[in-house]
Image 1 (cartoon, rainbow, N blue to C red):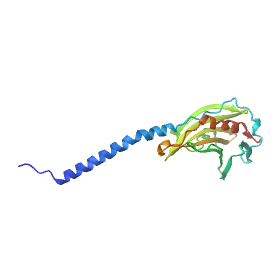
Image 2: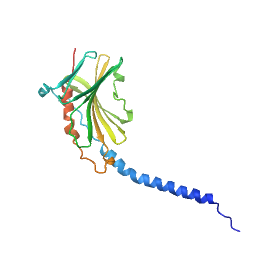
Image 3: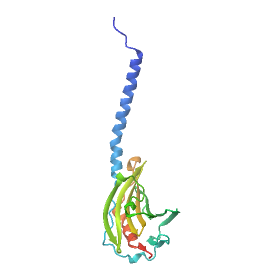
Image 4: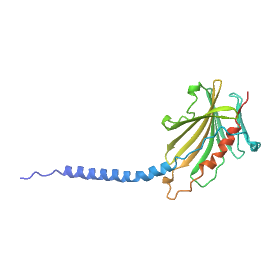
Length: 214
């Protein structure tokens, strides 16, 4: 007499087939999303030591900080978003002008000044270290800057940044230029891409205006 297969076995089998099908379906969708995510891993060209003073910044706005003793200019079309002052640091956010209607969703200058040792003058935006690449040291207007590049991706977009850090005595000052780029995979019809090299040119001009007050 043959043993009957319990009904629970068929139920488990059906559940397993459904689960496997869902995994296969999800995995089949991943490559497209990954490809879209990779396409947002843009390259921001770093500044070089050959940057000289820019005469055409005379009508730009100026951010000046007396506590940390520096100032820097930014385009007159830029929007000052705010300043956060704490006992241990100050943080400033400025939206820079950029063309609308592309994958570029935001372009900002974030300035962070704090007291720190040279070893701690790093990763100013707090991005997980695996996403940071150390760059070379450059001298701009006779000021030494360390370069750091990195990115941080969230749902539907990635923030790509290049930071320039300088020390004076025990003060660490960083100028962080950030591109927020949409993931084209989240659009039915993605907007056109943008030219990161062209959009980054203003970063060099901003760097050339940075100076210590004393």
